[in-house]
Length: 231
Image 1: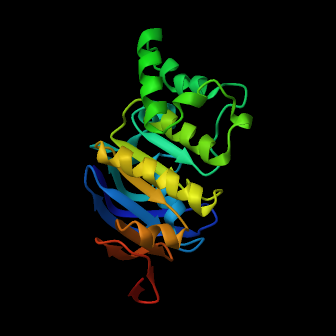
Image 2: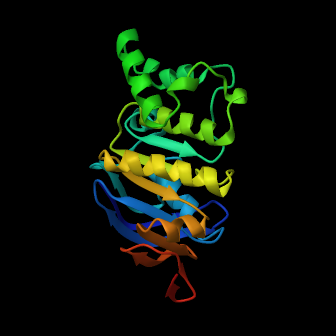
């Protein structure tokens, strides 16, 4: 599903954010991406949704080499994946239903198809009863669940979650994790960047630990890697 081969990312200030990274993620996996600030995990995530392009090497997602995707065609690629951010990025003047529907409208889906898919997505995240509410009428956790519904409404093969629980309390974070795990159980590959050691250790899944631009540990059985130990 995802294959990085000898990938490096060097920014204009000559900072090397990633240094010769190679890793494979199989279809259907749930993978945590962890590490201290500046370790390289954010750059790794940005490569996957083509916010950044690798300086060297190749980044393949479902057979597509993202290093060869031009800026003009990035939007077409992003329509095939789902992305969830820490700050939700909902449109404040649209209801929960409309925020999710918007992702289908840009595809030119007909009204009946949109209605069916949006309700299915909101049902999955447990918000069908709040579909007419606006973002400012929802809690942070509910807003993030709307964002997840929007990301999965097209049933993408890959869902990228960039610190999805970063602004949430532990109880709400656990709810978000349950939603993401259900999405994964339905066949979607999930790659999630997080600082939350508790979540990583509570929900054991493959964990990639970054430090100084390299992967210092690939824990297949999960667990946060720190000071030469898997916690």
